[in-house]
Length: 216
Image (tube, rainbow, N blue to C red; front, side, top):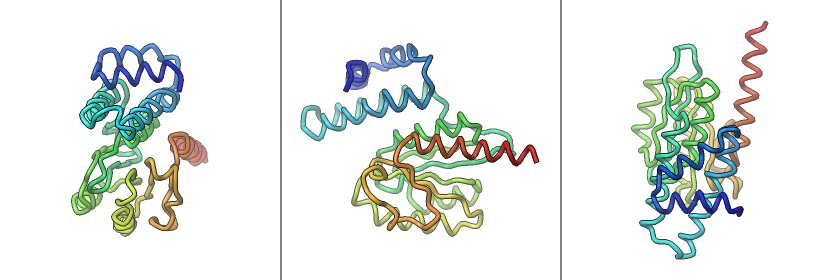
C-alpha cells in the first residue's frame, strides 16, 4: 500500500472529514472510478485489516466508515432523480448486511452515467425492498454482499426481485463477489460485478448500445 493511501486512511480513522475532502479534491485530474479504485477502496480494505488484526477498535472502524460515507456524499453524486426517460436503478444491502460503501460507489457511477438512482443503503428488509421496487419500477436492482452467512438470504432476495412484474436486471457486488463463485445463490441472468471496473465497463457498454439504438 502506498503512502498516499495510508495518509487518506489515517484521516478517515481520525474522523477528519475536512482533511479527507481536501485530500480527494487534490485528485480532481483523476476520474471518479480512478479515485474510488485507487484511494477509497484500498483505504477501507486497509482499515478492515487493521480491525481484523485487533490493531483498531470497532469504534475506530465505525468512525472511519462514517467519515468515508460523509466524504462520498459530499464530493460525489450518489442519488438523483432525473427525467422520466432516464433508466432507473435502486441499490440496497439485504437485511443484516451493513457493508454498503462499495455499493454507494457503484451508485455514484450510475448517477454519473445519467441514470436515476435510489440508494437504500444497508440492512433493508426484503418486504420493504420489494414494495419500493414495485412502486418505482427500476430497470436495475443492485445488491451487495460481504458476509458469508448472509448468502442464503441473498438467494431469496434475488429470486423475489427476479419475479417482479417489471423484470428488473439483478446485479450483485460486494466483497464476496470478488472472492467466491456466487452463481449458486443467483439466477441465471444475475449480473455479478467482482469490482468497480466491471460495473463501469457494463455502464459503458449500455451507453454505447443506447447511442447505437438512438441512431437507428
